[in-house]
Each structure stands twice: as structure tokens, then as C-alpha cells.
Length: 108
Image 1 (tube, rainbow, N blue to C red):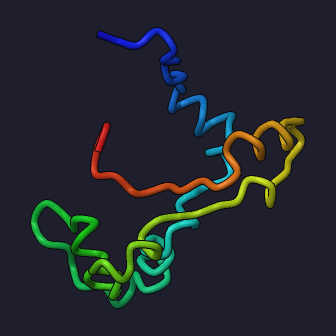
Image 2 (image 1 turned 120 degrees about the vertical axis):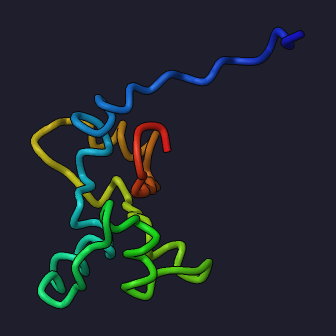
């Protein structure tokens, strides 16, 4: 039984969020592991069969363990970013502190 005063959570289309919404300000370069991978590409050993997992890369670059949780994600403050889309105030009010993480597949 659901109480009558419960308001359902809004549905956010993740593709629209990343393409046109607050997610448009984060990119692969926002993640330390990606930056390290490409800046050290010459010194990285050949990948094992099936490639590296993100946990392999976190370990390789010293980002493994609970003490590095913030270094494995990207955190942005929406009010720090503006572009030609006139949504700064609304976006900052609703989504001000935003975190992103790398996933290994759809819905991970």
C-alpha cells in the first residue's frame, strides 16, 4: 500500500541528460584513470586477452582501494560551467553537485 502523499520520483532520460543536460560538461578527460592511461600509453604493458578491466587500470595507476573512491569518479559543480544554452540557473539549482562514474556496461 502506497501512502497518498508520496510523490513519484521524476524519470530522467540518461541520454538526454548526458547530451543536452548537466552531463554535457563531463568527458573522458574528467576521469583521472583515463588521463593517466593516455598520458602513459607508451609505458603500459600489452593488455591481457580480453583487455584490461577498469579495476585493472585502477590498480595499475594506484587508484584502487577505498581511499581513492573520489579519484575514480568525476565530480563537477554545475555553477562552474556555462555555455550558449540558457539553463545555468535552473541546472545549478537542481543539479549543482554532480558525480559521475565509469561503468563496465549498460546499467552498471
